[in-house]
Image: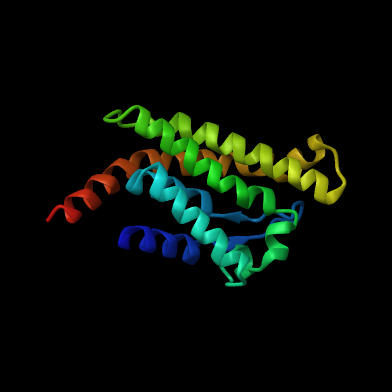
Amino acid sequence: MAVIGLMTAVICIAAPFSIPIPISPVPISLTNFIIFIAVYILGMRSASICVVLYLILGTAGLPVFSSFSGGLAKLAGPTGGYLAGFVLLALIQGFVLERFPGKKYAAVPGMIIGMAVCYALGTTWLAWQTGQSFAAALTIGVLPYLPGDAVKIIIAAITGPKLRAAVRRSLNK
């Protein structure tokens, strides 16, 4: 339980630090990267609980969402679909990681598929919220983020297994 609380806190601390980009209401953040790492460390169930706790804390008004915002309006706003998609990201990456235990980079396809599902949900919500077509929302809500997310996936695939092993060793002492 302590590690779930700690990883939830890490998400809550890292997520508000974001970089707005002029063409989109969706900022650049490290939230998905922290979720990637949480899944490696905790597994599907516990990491998904962390993400749900993060969303509950933000919805309750704590400033844990991008740009130190919080509240139901943020979840119901243009970026709400991406926020909700983070739960699916954790579930999908975790499922793939647990389905192929011992495979060092098994989570990479899970991270890619999870991000694609998160993007699909977020883009659909963004299009509906802004009155744009799905293609237009995709252009402002996904395409600018693909290179950065590819880097996050690579870094998570390299560091995640090492962090998982280190945490498990420390918990077994």
